[in-house]
Amino acid sequence: MIVLKSDAEIEKMAAAGAVVARVLNLMETEIAEGITTAQLDELAEQTVRDAGGVPTFKGYRGFPASICASPNAMVVHGIPSSYTVVDGDILSVDVGVTLDGLVADSAWTFPVGEISERTRELLATCEKALLAGIEQAQPGNHVGDISAAVQQITEAAGFAVIRTLVGHGVGRAMHEDPQVPNFGEPGSGTELREGMTIAIEPMITAGTHEIALADDEWSISTADGSMSAHFEHTVAITTDGPRILTVRTVPESAAAATSLLA
Ligand code: MG
Ligand code: MG
Image (cartoon, rainbow, N blue to C red; front, side):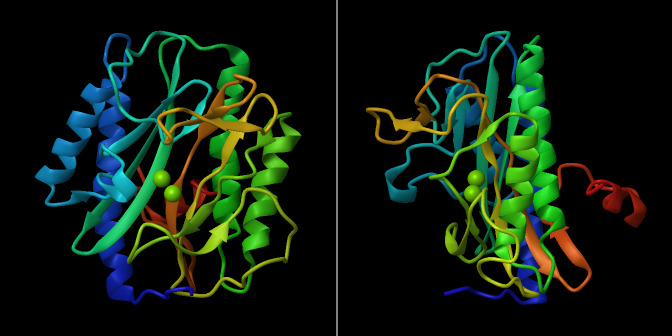
C-alpha cells in the first residue's frame, strides 16, 4: 500500500533529510586515509542524536550501526568495523534519520585520495543517473520512467545496474511501497502522484550485475569484485515537480535548485 504524505509530513521529512545531509557532509569532510568505518559511524550517530533524531538503521532487523559503510566492491549494507580507509578507495555511506516520527534516507559514494579515471566515471555516472531518475519523479509519470532513466544513463556509460536491489517508498517507515527498480520500461509500473515520497537509489557497477551476500548476512558485494557506487536521495512528488528532501547543498535560488536537475 502506498502511503501519501500530507504537506506537514513532507516538511518533517525535509527536516529529517537536513540531518541526513549534515551527516553526509560530515562524512565527506572526515573520510580520509587512516579513519575506520566504525569511527565514521560514531561521528554519524553523534550528529544525528545531537540534532534530536534517531539513526533509523540502528536495530533495523538487527542492523548494529547507524550508517552503512560499503567500500569498493561492496555495494550496500556494509557494517561499520575496524576497516581502515586507504587512498584509492571509494566508500559508500548510507544514512537514515528518523525525526519527529518521519524518515529520510540518502547515500553517497566518496572517493578517497586519488582514484582511477574509470572509477571516477563510475561515481559521476551514478550521480548523474540519480539526478536523471529524480527528474522523472513527476505527477502523472510512472515508476518505470525513473527506472528507465537510471538504466539509460548507466548503460550508456558502459556500466551495469544492480538488479536485485531497489529504491522504495519512504516516510512513515524506512521501506514502504512502491519498489523503485533501477531498470525498466518507460510508462510501466505505479503511476506517481502528488504526496508520494520515494527513495531513488541507483546502485551500479563497473562489472557485471551479479552480487554476493557476505557471511555477516548483511554486506552485499559485486560477485566479480568490480567497483560499485550508490547514490540516493529521498524525493517528494509535488505539483511543482520533484522535491529533493535530502539535498546536500541549500540552493540560493529556485534557479539553482532547477540547475541541480539539469
Ligand atoms: Mg539508504
Ligand atoms: Mg534506501
